[in-house]
Length: 250
Image (cartoon, rainbow, N blue to C red; front, side, top):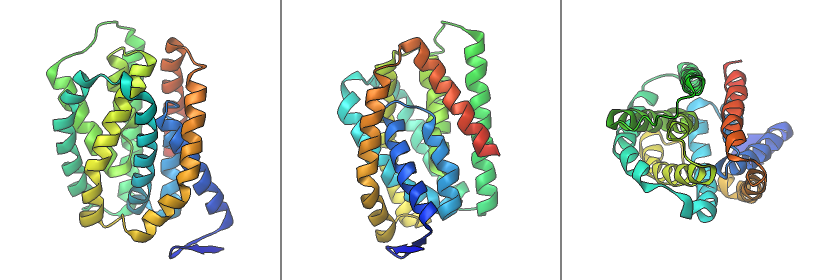
């Protein structure tokens, strides 16, 4: 056992923390879906609600890495449509997440993953090249993205559903998602600090300790994405999300 900034970890838990930091970095620079492996692991180590606060600064650090590399590829037309309803989703998630116990919280996270995955597979099965660029679709996806990122840092599947349906090229998909998550994650910080009180000095020191692994994961993600073509990348995102969702539900 090891005590680190008032937290006591077993050596397997420390190994998992290092691995999750690496995976978060990879996920944010394009290896989509892999970050969902992190959610159940962090929930087991810290508890459902507490884990969301520990993860958030790690996600922001990885978001910054992704924005630095992919910032030129962002499509701001989609981002402007998403942000207003996403902010409302964060507020709704803050209220609901603070009103339910940890066991229900974990069940809610699992349900969100499953529903999002079913929707994503349904849209791919339609194989439609028609872009659902309706105002209500962007508002709905924005709200669900804000809600799910607040209650469990699980908006990756929602944004994958929205951005894949927009038929964006690989780099534009990654760059647009990188800016969305950086801005919405920064918006979430005050709610975690003052409402849920899941971010504090000791948790942030843990985040800083893990920063080198996050940066290493981000570098590895960039290298791997370069080797994947646009068509294969779409199915890679869906496949990784499917595997992660099954693990979450199990």
